[in-house]
Amino acid sequence: MLSITTIAIVFGVVFLAELPDKTALAGLLLGTRYRASYVFAGVAAAFLLHVVLAVAAGSVLTLLPQRLVQAVVGVLFLAGAAVLLFRKGGDDEEEKAPEPTGQSFWKVSGAGFALILAAEFGDLTQIMTANLAARYDDPLSVGIGAVLALWAVAGIGILGGRTLMKYVPVRLITRIAAAVMVALAVFSLYEAVTG
Image 1: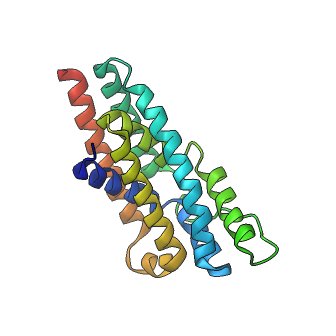
Image 2: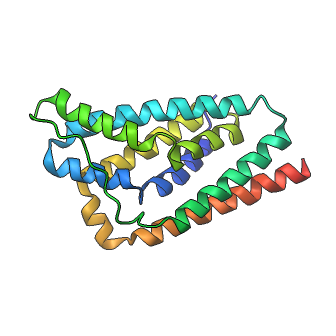
């Protein structure tokens, strides 16, 4: 059964964590070179695949004892917050995209797909999505929230990321995402201790 609350929480957490990520910048670069709809199709397909893998991994975690899962999820959220706050060069990183030789749909969307598939594998938001799937034990709601968040960030990056970054500092977005992750970590660790 779908939970609008879970979808909204997952959307917010994943959106904030992905917005300052290098793949949003890579989407922006691809979007300035090629037709936005072609880029988005490839990027969206790669994000969908990543979310399916993350939700499957998180669902496996639900088979473990609940206290252990909450403790692991709490520690991973803390680690994710630390990665956001202490990574070096994260604001300025740019991912090199494979260069499509033509403007065909398959070449451009394939380049976007390959870029996100490689850059996001094992990325913070994929790990976070697995954590959220384990935390909420609602794979469909978590998957929908994560996919919509990643697609929204991709759309913003492709269509207008440069303008957004002029008005909203990347550091602020990063700090908000880290604060949300710390709050989720504290809550998960509290539940692990209190059972």
